[in-house]
Image 1 (cartoon, one colour):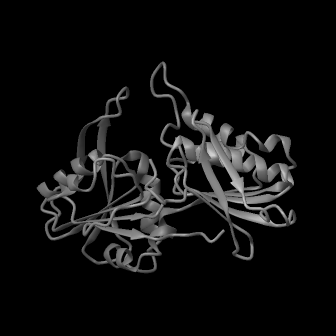
Image 2 (image 1 turned 60 degrees about the vertical axis):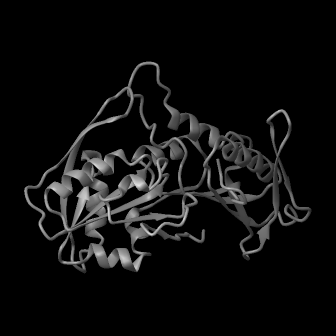
Image 3 (image 1 turned 60 degrees about the horizontal axis):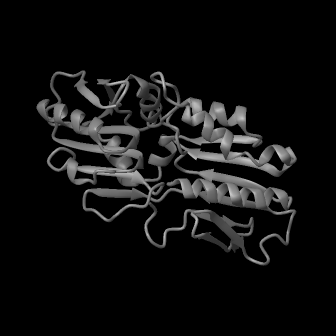
Length: 300
């Protein structure tokens, strides 16, 4: 559920003017939107929409908004920082849904009744896998699909850059699936002090997703700072397991960077294990001494 007062969808014209929109819910649970009187005046304009889809209501609100805009002949540049269902990018066991495919088809359910020229660009932040952008290109009619890299986001935080480029820092890759992502982050600092990468192995239960065990492929990290990087932190089990192993290897400091901080179990789960956490504003965050929020924006 979104925090009180949090606006999940923000719309601006190309000149920066904010378009007012009301989101309502009827007694039966149905969602309803109402745009301001002048919102549809300039049909030659391209609207910039940031949609933080953190609940099913947010998804429905966007679909209703999209219907209004496309039917009115307006083009859109759409930005979805955290793409819903990106983690369900395959079927892991019988009886499961391919949720990401459903979401990409649903997202542009209105678009196939409108000219391709009305749909401009869709931008996501550090999506879980290449499958997200592949399906967006396949199932939607946006002219351009952009995935913002974690390296580009990290560069917006001078304090995190200083930590990563320190001579006593190593980058921790949480699992085999994140090797390319972690390598890209490391190589973005090749003109500075490119950090060494240390990979981890973990085992999951394919039915529950529960972490069974974690292993850091190193023998001694005495005096070093370890920066764990990943796209999402939900309950934090992956990072708790890795941090416990890093402590056994005598790490002096442990830092966690995740693009999307869900933190469903709060940040207290990291007490005594992780010294500092960095994340973006893709999710609203509660203030914490442990947490640094990178206020990222593409500006469309």
